[in-house]
Length: 283
Image 1 (spheres, rainbow, N blue to C red):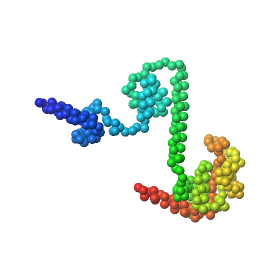
Image 2: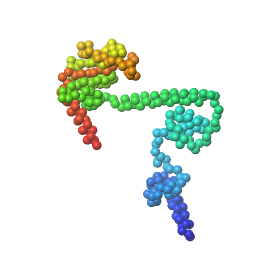
Image 3: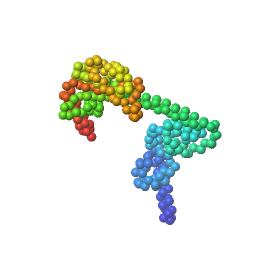
Image 4: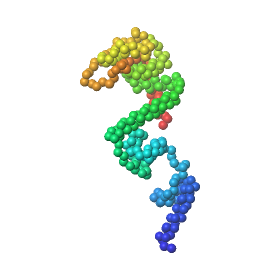
Protein backbone atom coordinates (compact mmCIF):
# COMPACT_ATOMS: atom_id res chain seq x y z
CA UNK A 1 0.00 0.00 0.00
CA UNK A 2 1.42 3.36 -1.00
CA UNK A 3 1.70 6.30 1.40
CA UNK A 4 -0.98 8.17 -0.55
CA UNK A 5 -3.37 5.21 -0.37
CA UNK A 6 -2.70 4.93 3.35
CA UNK A 7 -3.48 8.60 3.90
CA UNK A 8 -6.71 8.26 1.91
CA UNK A 9 -7.74 5.24 3.98
CA UNK A 10 -6.96 7.10 7.19
CA UNK A 11 -9.07 10.07 6.04
CA UNK A 12 -12.01 7.86 5.06
CA UNK A 13 -11.85 6.08 8.40
CA UNK A 14 -11.77 9.41 10.21
CA UNK A 15 -14.68 10.70 8.11
CA UNK A 16 -16.78 7.64 8.98
CA UNK A 17 -16.20 8.33 12.66
CA UNK A 18 -16.98 12.04 12.25
CA UNK A 19 -20.21 11.36 10.34
CA UNK A 20 -21.29 8.76 12.90
CA UNK A 21 -20.72 11.24 15.74
CA UNK A 22 -22.56 13.96 13.85
CA UNK A 23 -25.57 11.71 13.37
CA UNK A 24 -25.50 10.93 17.07
CA UNK A 25 -26.13 14.66 17.64
CA UNK A 26 -22.66 15.92 18.58
CA UNK A 27 -21.59 19.48 17.85
CA UNK A 28 -18.53 20.43 15.80
CA UNK A 29 -16.61 21.24 18.99
CA UNK A 30 -17.48 17.89 20.53
CA UNK A 31 -16.44 16.03 17.38
CA UNK A 32 -13.20 18.01 17.18
CA UNK A 33 -12.33 17.18 20.75
CA UNK A 34 -13.34 13.53 20.41
CA UNK A 35 -11.26 12.95 17.23
CA UNK A 36 -8.48 15.43 18.09
CA UNK A 37 -8.93 17.32 14.81
CA UNK A 38 -7.76 20.88 15.37
CA UNK A 39 -7.70 21.96 11.73
CA UNK A 40 -11.03 23.57 10.73
CA UNK A 41 -10.48 22.87 7.02
CA UNK A 42 -10.05 19.16 7.68
CA UNK A 43 -13.04 19.19 10.04
CA UNK A 44 -15.16 20.84 7.34
CA UNK A 45 -14.15 18.12 4.85
CA UNK A 46 -14.92 15.39 7.36
CA UNK A 47 -18.42 16.76 8.01
CA UNK A 48 -19.19 17.83 4.43
CA UNK A 49 -22.83 17.22 3.59
CA UNK A 50 -23.85 16.47 7.18
CA UNK A 51 -26.35 18.99 8.61
CA UNK A 52 -25.85 20.18 12.20
CA UNK A 53 -28.22 18.82 14.87
CA UNK A 54 -31.15 21.04 15.76
CA UNK A 55 -29.94 21.73 19.30
CA UNK A 56 -26.80 23.48 18.00
CA UNK A 57 -28.75 26.00 15.96
CA UNK A 58 -28.99 29.35 17.68
CA UNK A 59 -32.36 31.12 17.68
CA UNK A 60 -32.30 33.98 15.21
CA UNK A 61 -34.50 37.04 15.63
CA UNK A 62 -34.65 37.27 11.82
CA UNK A 63 -35.90 33.74 11.22
CA UNK A 64 -39.45 34.96 10.60
CA UNK A 65 -38.21 37.66 8.22
CA UNK A 66 -36.09 35.12 6.35
CA UNK A 67 -39.01 32.72 5.94
CA UNK A 68 -41.26 35.54 4.76
CA UNK A 69 -38.59 36.76 2.30
CA UNK A 70 -38.29 33.27 0.80
CA UNK A 71 -42.06 33.01 0.54
CA UNK A 72 -42.29 36.34 -1.31
CA UNK A 73 -39.38 35.45 -3.58
CA UNK A 74 -41.14 32.23 -4.60
CA UNK A 75 -44.15 34.38 -5.47
CA UNK A 76 -41.97 36.29 -7.92
CA UNK A 77 -41.23 39.40 -5.87
CA UNK A 78 -38.14 41.47 -6.63
CA UNK A 79 -35.50 42.38 -4.04
CA UNK A 80 -36.81 45.97 -4.04
CA UNK A 81 -40.38 44.92 -3.24
CA UNK A 82 -39.24 42.50 -0.54
CA UNK A 83 -37.04 45.19 1.00
CA UNK A 84 -39.94 47.66 1.17
CA UNK A 85 -42.33 45.03 2.50
CA UNK A 86 -40.06 43.69 5.25
CA UNK A 87 -37.89 46.72 5.99
CA UNK A 88 -34.61 44.78 5.85
CA UNK A 89 -31.48 45.21 3.73
CA UNK A 90 -31.01 43.85 0.21
CA UNK A 91 -27.83 42.09 1.30
CA UNK A 92 -29.79 40.08 3.87
CA UNK A 93 -32.50 39.26 1.34
CA UNK A 94 -29.89 38.13 -1.18
CA UNK A 95 -28.32 35.83 1.41
CA UNK A 96 -31.67 34.31 2.37
CA UNK A 97 -33.03 33.62 -1.14
CA UNK A 98 -29.93 33.08 -3.26
CA UNK A 99 -30.68 29.37 -3.67
CA UNK A 100 -34.16 30.07 -5.06
CA UNK A 101 -34.86 30.43 -8.81
CA UNK A 102 -34.80 33.94 -10.16
CA UNK A 103 -38.35 35.10 -11.00
CA UNK A 104 -39.21 35.94 -14.58
CA UNK A 105 -39.21 39.62 -15.45
CA UNK A 106 -42.75 40.91 -15.76
CA UNK A 107 -43.85 43.98 -17.65
CA UNK A 108 -46.03 46.23 -15.51
CA UNK A 109 -47.88 49.43 -16.36
CA UNK A 110 -45.83 52.60 -15.93
CA UNK A 111 -45.81 53.75 -12.31
CA UNK A 112 -46.88 50.41 -10.84
CA UNK A 113 -43.56 49.77 -9.07
CA UNK A 114 -43.58 53.28 -7.65
CA UNK A 115 -47.09 52.87 -6.25
CA UNK A 116 -46.23 49.47 -4.82
CA UNK A 117 -43.08 50.89 -3.22
CA UNK A 118 -45.00 53.79 -1.68
CA UNK A 119 -47.68 51.48 -0.32
CA UNK A 120 -45.00 49.14 1.01
CA UNK A 121 -43.30 52.01 2.82
CA UNK A 122 -46.60 53.08 4.36
CA UNK A 123 -47.32 49.54 5.51
CA UNK A 124 -43.81 49.14 6.92
CA UNK A 125 -44.20 52.46 8.75
CA UNK A 126 -47.46 51.28 10.31
CA UNK A 127 -45.83 48.05 11.45
CA UNK A 128 -42.95 49.96 13.03
CA UNK A 129 -45.41 52.20 14.88
CA UNK A 130 -47.24 49.17 16.25
CA UNK A 131 -43.95 47.56 17.34
CA UNK A 132 -42.79 50.85 18.91
CA UNK A 133 -45.99 51.25 20.91
CA UNK A 134 -45.89 47.61 22.06
CA UNK A 135 -42.28 48.00 23.24
CA UNK A 136 -43.02 51.31 24.97
CA UNK A 137 -46.08 49.92 26.75
CA UNK A 138 -44.23 46.78 27.88
CA UNK A 139 -41.42 48.89 29.34
CA UNK A 140 -43.95 51.17 31.07
CA UNK A 141 -45.74 48.19 32.61
CA UNK A 142 -42.44 46.83 33.98
CA UNK A 143 -41.95 49.89 36.20
CA UNK A 144 -45.01 49.52 38.40
CA UNK A 145 -45.00 51.37 41.73
CA UNK A 146 -41.84 53.13 42.95
CA UNK A 147 -40.68 53.58 46.52
CA UNK A 148 -39.75 56.87 48.20
CA UNK A 149 -36.10 55.87 47.98
CA UNK A 150 -36.39 55.26 44.25
CA UNK A 151 -38.11 58.62 43.76
CA UNK A 152 -35.36 60.31 45.77
CA UNK A 153 -32.65 58.74 43.57
CA UNK A 154 -34.52 59.55 40.36
CA UNK A 155 -35.09 63.16 41.38
CA UNK A 156 -31.45 63.59 42.41
CA UNK A 157 -30.20 62.34 39.04
CA UNK A 158 -32.80 64.45 37.23
CA UNK A 159 -31.72 67.63 39.01
CA UNK A 160 -28.02 66.98 38.47
CA UNK A 161 -28.69 66.54 34.74
CA UNK A 162 -31.05 69.49 34.22
CA UNK A 163 -30.86 71.75 37.26
CA UNK A 164 -28.62 74.73 38.02
CA UNK A 165 -25.21 74.06 39.59
CA UNK A 166 -24.01 77.16 41.42
CA UNK A 167 -21.15 77.86 43.84
CA UNK A 168 -20.11 79.32 46.24
CA UNK A 169 -23.75 80.25 46.95
CA UNK A 170 -25.72 77.12 46.01
CA UNK A 171 -29.42 77.31 45.28
CA UNK A 172 -32.10 75.11 43.72
CA UNK A 173 -33.37 76.12 40.26
CA UNK A 174 -34.75 73.62 37.75
CA UNK A 175 -35.73 74.64 34.19
CA UNK A 176 -37.45 72.50 31.57
CA UNK A 177 -40.06 72.62 28.81
CA UNK A 178 -41.43 69.11 29.45
CA UNK A 179 -44.50 69.20 31.75
CA UNK A 180 -43.81 65.66 32.97
CA UNK A 181 -40.28 66.61 34.00
CA UNK A 182 -41.69 69.54 35.96
CA UNK A 183 -44.33 67.35 37.64
CA UNK A 184 -41.70 64.75 38.60
CA UNK A 185 -39.40 67.43 40.01
CA UNK A 186 -42.23 68.88 42.11
CA UNK A 187 -43.05 65.41 43.49
CA UNK A 188 -39.38 65.06 44.43
CA UNK A 189 -39.45 68.39 46.26
CA UNK A 190 -42.58 67.41 48.19
CA UNK A 191 -40.91 64.12 49.15
CA UNK A 192 -38.10 66.18 50.67
CA UNK A 193 -40.52 68.30 52.67
CA UNK A 194 -40.42 71.47 50.57
CA UNK A 195 -43.68 73.35 51.18
CA UNK A 196 -45.59 75.37 48.56
CA UNK A 197 -44.72 78.72 50.15
CA UNK A 198 -41.03 78.12 49.28
CA UNK A 199 -41.70 77.62 45.56
CA UNK A 200 -41.49 80.30 42.86
CA UNK A 201 -42.09 79.86 39.14
CA UNK A 202 -40.73 81.80 36.17
CA UNK A 203 -41.78 81.35 32.52
CA UNK A 204 -39.36 81.93 29.64
CA UNK A 205 -40.93 82.12 26.20
CA UNK A 206 -40.47 83.72 22.78
CA UNK A 207 -42.30 87.00 22.35
CA UNK A 208 -44.08 85.74 19.22
CA UNK A 209 -45.79 82.91 21.14
CA UNK A 210 -49.14 83.01 22.96
CA UNK A 211 -47.90 84.20 26.34
CA UNK A 212 -51.32 84.19 28.03
CA UNK A 213 -51.93 80.57 26.99
CA UNK A 214 -48.47 79.58 28.22
CA UNK A 215 -49.08 81.14 31.63
CA UNK A 216 -52.39 79.27 31.93
CA UNK A 217 -50.70 76.04 30.83
CA UNK A 218 -47.94 76.17 33.46
CA UNK A 219 -50.39 77.21 36.18
CA UNK A 220 -52.38 74.07 35.37
CA UNK A 221 -49.26 71.86 35.38
CA UNK A 222 -47.96 73.13 38.73
CA UNK A 223 -51.23 73.91 40.51
CA UNK A 224 -49.51 77.08 41.77
CA UNK A 225 -51.27 80.32 42.66
CA UNK A 226 -50.69 83.53 40.63
CA UNK A 227 -48.62 85.09 43.42
CA UNK A 228 -46.08 82.25 43.10
CA UNK A 229 -45.30 83.25 39.51
CA UNK A 230 -42.68 85.88 38.77
CA UNK A 231 -42.63 88.11 35.71
CA UNK A 232 -42.58 86.18 32.43
CA UNK A 233 -39.30 86.60 30.53
CA UNK A 234 -39.82 87.22 26.80
CA UNK A 235 -37.14 86.12 24.36
CA UNK A 236 -36.51 88.35 21.35
CA UNK A 237 -37.51 86.75 18.07
CA UNK A 238 -34.79 86.42 15.44
CA UNK A 239 -36.43 86.04 12.00
CA UNK A 240 -33.20 84.57 10.57
CA UNK A 241 -33.43 81.45 12.73
CA UNK A 242 -35.50 78.44 11.70
CA UNK A 243 -37.16 77.92 15.07
CA UNK A 244 -39.12 74.66 15.40
CA UNK A 245 -40.69 75.24 18.82
CA UNK A 246 -43.78 76.95 17.44
CA UNK A 247 -47.51 76.23 17.34
CA UNK A 248 -50.22 75.65 19.91
CA UNK A 249 -48.16 73.07 21.80
CA UNK A 250 -45.30 75.49 22.45
CA UNK A 251 -45.46 76.87 26.00
CA UNK A 252 -41.87 77.92 26.55
CA UNK A 253 -39.81 76.78 29.54
CA UNK A 254 -40.63 76.90 33.22
CA UNK A 255 -38.09 77.53 35.96
CA UNK A 256 -38.87 76.17 39.43
CA UNK A 257 -36.96 77.93 42.18
CA UNK A 258 -36.80 76.91 45.85
CA UNK A 259 -36.42 79.73 48.34
CA UNK A 260 -33.71 79.14 50.95
CA UNK A 261 -32.60 76.09 49.01
CA UNK A 262 -28.87 76.08 49.83
CA UNK A 263 -29.12 73.25 52.36
CA UNK A 264 -31.24 71.20 49.98
CA UNK A 265 -28.66 71.74 47.24
CA UNK A 266 -25.83 70.48 49.44
CA UNK A 267 -27.85 67.41 50.40
CA UNK A 268 -28.71 66.72 46.75
CA UNK A 269 -25.11 67.16 45.63
CA UNK A 270 -23.88 64.75 48.30
CA UNK A 271 -26.55 62.22 47.32
CA UNK A 272 -25.51 62.48 43.66
CA UNK A 273 -21.89 61.62 44.41
CA UNK A 274 -23.12 58.83 46.65
CA UNK A 275 -24.99 57.41 43.64
CA UNK A 276 -21.86 57.69 41.49
CA UNK A 277 -19.69 55.88 44.06
CA UNK A 278 -22.30 53.17 44.64
CA UNK A 279 -22.61 52.56 40.90
CA UNK A 280 -18.83 52.38 40.57
CA UNK A 281 -18.61 49.88 43.40
CA UNK A 282 -20.69 47.43 41.37
CA UNK A 283 -17.70 46.98 39.05
